[in-house]
Image 1 (cartoon, rainbow, N blue to C red):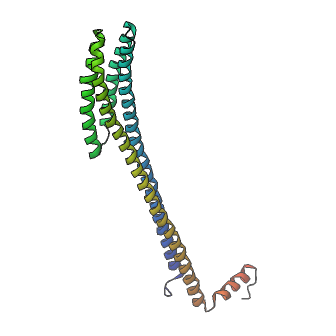
Image 2 (image 1 turned 135 degrees about the vertical axis):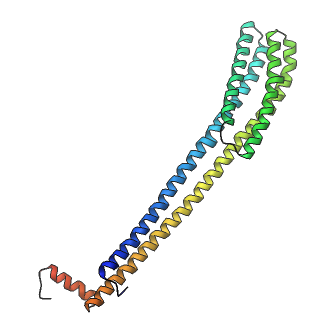
Image 3 (image 1 turned 90 degrees about the vertical axis):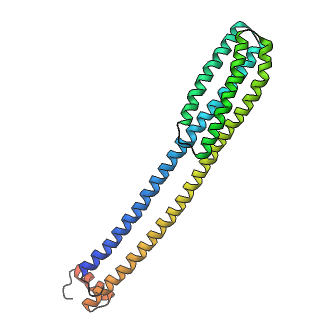
Length: 237
């Protein structure tokens, strides 16, 4: 470095600092992009599906309660109202379920979804529809017989739905923990880069001053004294 010109030395130091600055900026941008992608995944792949599953679970329970209500109070008006509500809920659940399956599912999610589809189909075909048919025919005895089976089928489907919701919570937790670990890694890397950059700047700065002083045949303190005197108008030096 002693054989380099002053301009070359300054350019080298500034170039190294510029490279370091770009590297730190790149790491920061990567961290921001990763955090943004993780937040998007937690919302789109976990929060939204969990909400859909929660709505489905709630509507399935409402259907069971509507059938029970119509059996307990079998007035024509209430029976007609509850039957219509159950039919509307069945259609709504189908739309919600289709929306859930349209999301990006993991292998475990796909397996649970297949299981729930079969259980929910049985709940509707072997539980709700026979119950609605009995209510429309005003056959409360048959409706009570079907109600027992309806309750069992609902419990099975509801348990499967709860398992899927818990899976969303578990996956969201994993993504959060991965994000925290990524943040810690980036933080350590940035701090290490800053420390290395400051140390590098200090070393090169010292070498630069030392080299210039040697070329002038003086110690660094003497060079500073001369330049200070010149700055104050003393040109005798």
